[in-house]
Length: 227
Image (tube, rainbow, N blue to C red; front, side, top):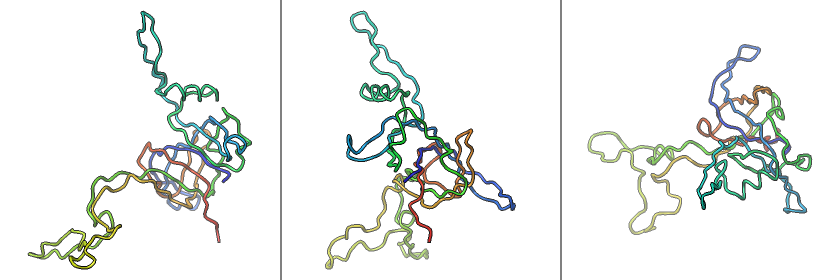
């Protein structure tokens, strides 16, 4: 992997190409991401780049200790992370992620990764936490078929038989049943970058990207190989 960046989802809109074809796109605020640490095979056993994204709001809490005010909490991060950011020479970040880039040795702590690493026509994979939909039935959660809706059937939206009483005398593991839906890690592969705004660090991606608005999205060059 040579290209990767963190982004936040702004929302969806539509644009027109040169032929006048309407294209539905998702707008992503991609970067700038700041390198906070470079992992090397000698030190860490593998090669990767640790990046920070979105500045944390400055928050200082003073505590009176023996008549003197002492700062006990700054930027909403604990002391180990404060030292980690200070060592890299960057401000406190809300998100920290590792990107396993092939050219990780080309980066240094404090350097930036911006949206201009991608270009129009690039193929990407988008990873995010999907929208949470709460507790849902088997029809919505698993796409199961409903029962007859006529009078007296008493079976409309139930998940069906759970297991016969004599054989197998149990409910098999993995049986589709009602439960919590959504709020899982989802990757949509082989999306197309329609437009790049380098000045505003915006990426316009064709189609839908998982997750809610303002949610964190990891953008990587696709692993799909064109036939």
